[in-house]
Length: 402
Image 1 (cartoon, rainbow, N blue to C red):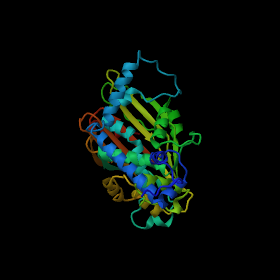
Image 2: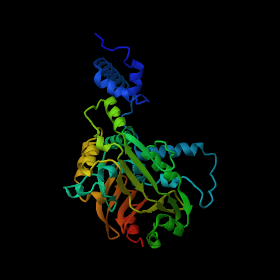
Image 3: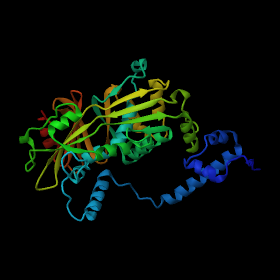
Image 4: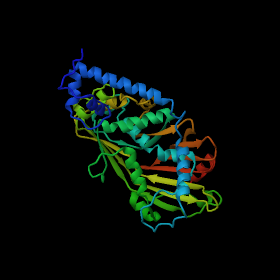
């Protein structure tokens, strides 16, 4: 016998609820108390799973890599472009040029994986080893070291899905979003699109410290000794937990066992991404480029709420969909409050921890052996190099930054 009554939401309302469309907050409470609606929602979930399984045979065998996407986008842009566009005047907003998009795999990974790095940074910022961090849950995370976290194409996709799901647990906002919710990767893209061409001195003023340049004698043959300098503005991502919104989301996605305690309600994670300067050295006879990136430290704070640091860590690491192997790597990181995890796709990139310009860092080398990148921290600043050259040649340039 069907116990659904006229006071129950109809099937259309439940479909909208499962699709996370706007709905009264009372629907989640109604579902908990109504066996008839519980059966109806279960049937709708089964139907959706069946349809999803049927459609899955149409899916590609694998998703394109970040490098393949960059190449495809470049081909599309080249076909659309009737003629070469004139260089915009100094100080105007401009997109990152195609020569950067054509650079080797590690650099493209560093750009396309920014959102994944952010969510990993959020999680690592609340993953204390031992009980020392429990003394103050407002302890600040500052990116003073770097370490590699190995990811696969599947775990990359899972990280992105988990990052995007944060919007279902509360609100994500950035300055200039006019109060509207945004996705973290959209905020990152927005900052990159606001890159401006400036002088070296002006870029140093923007980032807050004097920029370093390599010894010109170490630059690859054919590269211009004078770099084109761009600066990207700082930006901030604020994520505020909403208990009722999170409860409804976990119920609608079949995870009623996941509970956001009342103490989390109103707590805000604040991720501050610093301004960054990019020095681009170009080869006039080819489209090869060498990029030198410099920025301050990424900082994560907690504001409001009544949640402690260990509780925040436990909840974030228990979120459905986060890859277990990634979580395991994060838990093994020592000095959690000063280590920035860098996602490294192990199917595309070889990596090693090494000394760069006298500091601990990461050296990345793509599987083609014609592209490499290096990332390290020194003196309160983050540095990165990437280019279409061998790792040994890149290291020679990196070690002369002064």
